[in-house]
Image (tube, rainbow, N blue to C red; front, top):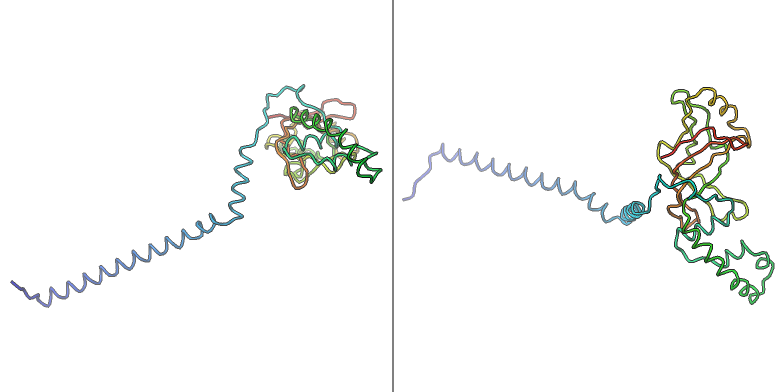
Length: 256
């Protein structure tokens, strides 16, 4: 049986309908807003540069790490750019550039443009270079003796001698002039960014030598972890630091 609604009932239905429409409208707005908020994240995920950075971060995280328990006798002193050259090829696993290596090692190679003579020299050098690269790969713990200008003035509040920032950010690159094409950079944990010296007499002795040429040597114990393929830089992790005077006396040290 059909029933007619009273005017009052009709008014109530109209209000209810408006409420439902309003609710639906707000829900749609919220959905649109959520989609808009999600859009930048989706765009970032598809950004080639962002993907490249994420892949690089993942690669770096997978690199071998320095072992602080490695004994001192396992570290090998680097005192030649040629040693850095061999270490670079060992760490990077890149094929050795024999022409470039011969330029560094052989005066005879540099002195001639005769391509047959050059090939003969390369044939003699190649076994030696392969052996040196293999040996460098087995000795990735290295010692680098750096200039004293890396040490800053005494911090009285922390009772430490800071090591200058550029050394830790990978911006400072060290090399030997006999083969400056190959270089090394250092990064380190926060506790290695300064040398603690609580004893005032020792602090005075060190402070007197800061910025004096040849008065101090910073001996860096590091692990060759990675390589910059574009600029031929061995990237290393610092494990220990020692500060020595010009006679080799140990003045301060810090380690992981």
